Image (cartoon, rainbow, N blue to C red; front, top):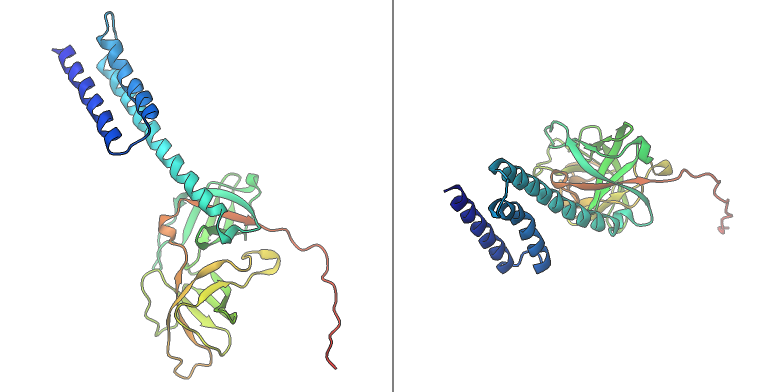
Length: 272
């Protein structure tokens, strides 16, 4: 009776492998290898003198399932890393790739802190820019030997100097919006630092900090999604839809910049 059940299990597994092949699963070589690995213990059991137990088969099945999950995760991470390194956010920069391994308790604005799996021993230090393929994520706030904590754009402790639109109008972007601003969930508040035009669809990019810390210049923050009536205010304000959805991140990059070590050359004006 026991052998009959095992034969039925072997047939069922064979059918599953065949169905995966029909719906466009891995190539034939991978399927044959996977089938041999899965059915091998059953063949040993059913063969004369086979001694494999049901417990052995269960352990083997659990091991194979774990390896499959790891392989799928590795493939997804490799694709995300390739996209990150090919994106404008990392162009010309030294990048330390990292995986997101922890999320802090969300606040009113959503996720405000992430933990990544790189740290001081990887060359990471506090106040480094963290990006994803789409644009800005936040800044490194604390560093351990093998991990770092990142404050996410949109949290109460992250305000970014920015340039808006083709004219490059100066602005600040942060989690707190003007009191009258009605924003969709996850959107950021934006206020121009001067009088000027603000239009829906304008790109918002980082202004940059001294020596690129905490923010390097030119990284996409998001796009203007709404503009508030000025109502007597000198500077327009509005909302920004972030370029990155931090709730779906798996791979990010920490940008390493070298401090400026030589003075800029002086120049002589040509005005009369």
